[in-house]
Amino acid sequence: MQSMELPLVLFTVFSQAAIGLTLMRVVRTTADGTGSGDRDARREWGLIAGLMILGMLGSLFHLGHPLYAPTALKHLGTAWLSREVLFAGMFTGVTVLAVLVAGMTGRPWLAWLGTLLGLGVIVSAGMTYAPPALPALNNALPFAFFLTSAVVLGAGFGSWFAGEERAPLMARIFTTALVVGLVLNLAAPCVWLSGGTVMRMTGEAWLGSGFYWAHVAVLLACLGAVWKTRTVPAWLPVLALLGELAGRAGFFADTIHTAANMGGLY
Amino acid sequence: MKKQYAFLVDTERCIGCFTCAMACRNYYHQVEGVVWRQVHPLSEEIYPHRERAFLSLSCNHCENPACLNVCPVEAYTKREEDGVVVHHQEKCIGCGNCIRSCPYGAPKYNPVEKRAEKCSLCHERLDAGLDPACVQACPTDALQLVDLAEFERTNEVQYPAGYPRMEGLNPSTRFVLPKTPKMVRR
Image 1: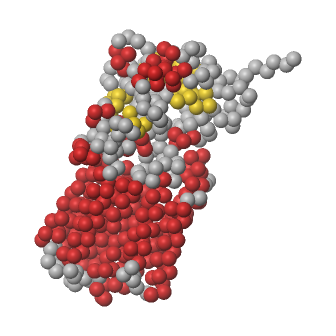
Image 2 (image 1 turned 90 degrees about the vertical axis):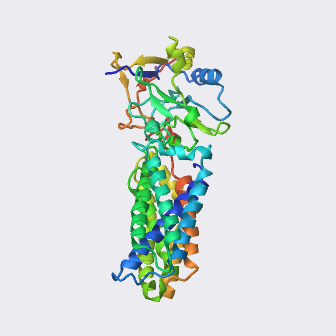
């Protein structure tokens, strides 16, 4: 069992919610090519920027020396963490700019730029948290988990701003992302059980973890709520956010490091 | 091949006395809970005998170190002259990325300094023509310092059982495997 890394949990989940919201802005406003899905852009960009700033501030508590956080940009050549910090910083800048220039409708190019930078954050975070020391995650799974979280939270919170004509679209995307998230989360630990020793230990740790089952239960509950109401109720994204926070805490706490088995079979 | 200092761990000679780990601790006075060199007993699945065999491990000073590659503040360097991977603690911001990324668990978090730290192969002793503290202290010569560029033994292995195989990193530590113990019947 490693540390829960609460600051990283907050940073990754809040930033992915912000990125997902930006992505869903693009989807909503370009769904029929007229931009008619855009309403109350300033409030939406305000939520996006707020989530991102909260996440960035939260991440500082992870550092031993937060005042030197800007030096983390020094190693862009090989360190995915440096690239993640760069993309996250640029994405935050775009969200703040969007708040400043948005009226009731936003500037589409800012949403597109934000989406591109946001995907950069997700790719670089996916690489940062996929080191060889964590065999279960030394693959595309962190990226897949992060992208799924972004779409679940983006479509969920995006439904607050969608209006009646775009609400069914958000509900469909939300439901699809929930199903993908469930499949990923149920399949991954089962596959790990047939892997090497450390991978199997990770599978057992996840399947024995309250964080993991809380996450799965929330995904199922969200699916059930959407199925029953045929829409995304206003409270549902908050529940989904809590589920993602629990799942991410498990992601950090229950993934076994190779060094935990030194002297044993690998 | 360029000069590359490395630890040679002779598990046939190692008696698991922890003197290497204690020598490291005595020399650097790490804070409580921080251990740069650790002695790991091989599991019975790997060495199924009443006698035990051990892997004495610290930083492997890899050819392509994960810690160096992932550090966002360039707090790690690999010395040109001997391949030693050095952590410059004054640059470290304590993000823990090296700790998460090294498959051998070499970098540790110092909760007092709030920064990472690890074995630097006693590079200041090497520069003075001395052996690392752990090598000097080993009572059975089970732990030795070798230069891989001139290393001529043929019975050593790079990845013994009980040690993660990470070819991308190419760890420099080499191991001599333990033999089956002699059975004395009375």
